[in-house]
Amino acid sequence: MFSTPLARFRTVAIAEGVSYLMLFGITMPLKYMAAMPTPNRVVGMIHGILSVAYVVLLISAARSEGWSVTKSAVALFASLVPFGAFVLEWQLRKETRSPLA
Image 1 (cartoon, helix red, strand yellow):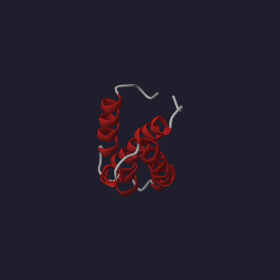
Image 2 (tube, one colour; image 1 turned 90 degrees about the vertical axis):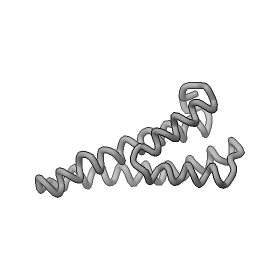
Image 3 (cartoon, helix red, strand yellow; image 1 turned 180 degrees about the horizontal axis):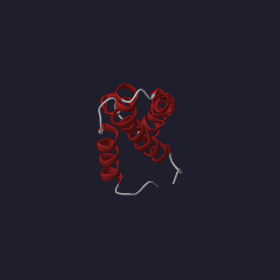
Image 4 (tube, one colour; image 1 turned 30 degrees about the vertical axis):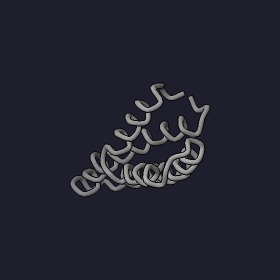
C-alpha cells in the first residue's frame, strides 16, 4: 500500500481531505454554535500534521514521478480547496490506473 512515494502521497491526500472536511463541516460548527472548542483543537492538530505531511510527500512524489512545476502547484492548491484532495487523488488513480499501490 505504501510501496512508492506516489502511493504514500495519495494515502495522505485522502486523510488530509477527510480531516479538512471534518474540521470545517463538524468541529468548527461545534466550536462556534455549541461552544465546544475541544474537538476543533484535536482535529485541527491532526489536520495540521497531515497538511505538513501532504506537502512533504507531495515534494517526494513530484520528484519520483517527474511532475512539472505546474502539476505540483495544482496538487498543492488542491489541498486548499474543499474536496480538492479527493479530486486530485481520483485523477492520480486514473493516470496510474491502479489502487493505492
